[in-house]
Structure formats: C-alpha cells, structure tokens
Length: 172
Image (tube, rainbow, N blue to C red; front, top):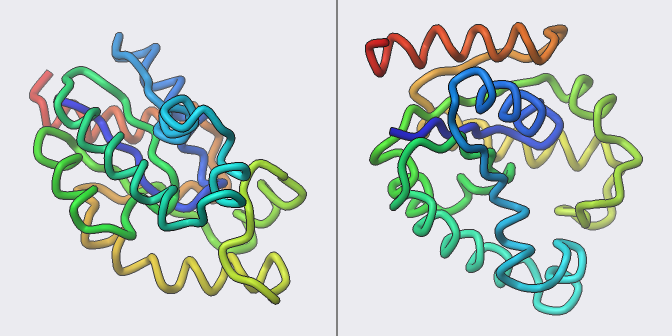
C-alpha cells in the first residue's frame, strides 16, 4: 500500500513526505522530480516549451507508473487532482491525504519561489493562489481519504497526525 500526499504547493508535502518515509521505512517519490527526469527538463522548461497540457500528460504517465508500485510515500504536485484518472490510479492502493493550508499560509511559504511557472496570467501571486485553490478544493476533498490542516503545524506534528491515520488504515 502507498501513502499519497495531495494538496496545493506550499502545504508541506515534500518536507512531510521525507519525514514519513523515514519513520515508516518506506521510499519517498516526488512526482514532479519524476516528471522532470522523464522529460529531461525542469518544470518551467516543460511548460515554456510544450505548455501545461504536456506537463499534465507526463504527470498522468508518472501517476500510472507509481500506482503500480507498493510501499511508497508519493509526494504529488498540487495539480495532480486536475485529471480524475490520476487520482483513480493513485488511490487504488493507497491512503490519500490532503494536506490543507490557508491562502495566507501558502503565500507566506512559497512566495518568491521560481521553480513553478504561473498558473493564472495577469493576477497577483495571492490572487493566483486564491483562485486556483478555490477551483481545486472540491477536487482535493473528493480525492482524499484524510484531511490534515497544516496551518501553524511543524512538519513533525503533521507527520505524526498522518501516521495515526496510516496505522488506522493499514492496521499496524
């Protein structure tokens, strides 16, 4: 069984994923890293050359590949839920945890980052986060087995809460 972390970027998926993998003795896989390896390009380069649809196609390929493996903590990109087929394959053998955070928390954690191109043109960073989060929230809710609010929590505490849900799910 896998542990799949979903949520907007800046909610702590990568940091918490590393903690969880270490504590649970599982391997952590960052989907965005896998996409970049597959493409031989960074995410900004993929989007600049081919656009977001190509990035999403690569993401779907990686989701299928990872879903066929077992014993992984999968740190997804924030938009993995944009395509229902991604969550169908990823959740088939997994506990899916939505790591939530407020717009203010997300902006404070990731503003100034350069590793992701804009999702919405012509908006301030805060407006973009708010708009995209509003659109994605129902998708995260639908996909998640468990929801964890990460506002004001350290990665260790978030990991502890996820581990409680994991042990309830897998029975150990």
